[in-house]
Length: 117
Image (cartoon, rainbow, N blue to C red; front, side, top):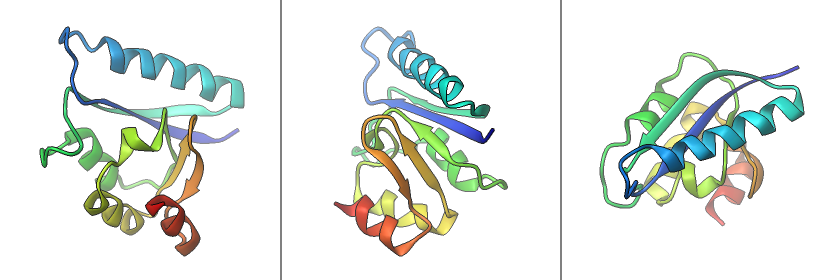
């Protein structure tokens, strides 16, 4: 049994109802349950582009966590989109589980290289 935190993001929530982020979170919770993982914290950024140089509060909260649990996300592009964000992640020593892109240990040199590809 492992503990994970969830992260979901969408650039534009056209209906402004959180539906797409909620859909991601629903799928992530189901995936975590199938793996036998316990979901501890949930981080989200609704209608915030990762490429528009806007602050993403959920992303910032993940980087500032005092615990070192893996993050489960739908796809790595939900968590980081631009190199400057990826550069900040290894300092937080985060392991990212991605349902679409596979798992990446961004706290290791090999993981950093994979994250940049």
